[in-house]
Image 1 (cartoon, rainbow, N blue to C red):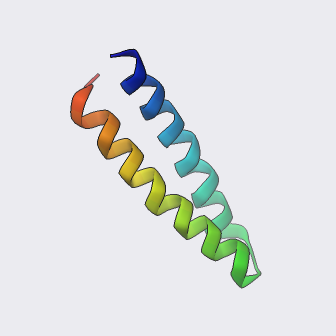
Image 2 (cartoon, rainbow, N blue to C red; image 1 turned 135 degrees about the vertical axis):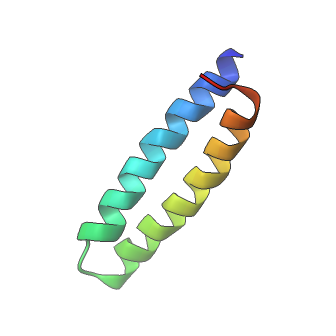
Length: 54
């Protein structure tokens, strides 16, 4: 269970960073990196929360 909690926490951190970058960056490259981080965080959080549900 502990690894799922850690994965969920990491997914939340990645989602916050990605949304910040996607919304506030004015250049195209950092905004695309933010979008990619959002997609990665969805997969990480789906993995974590499918096994661990608070």
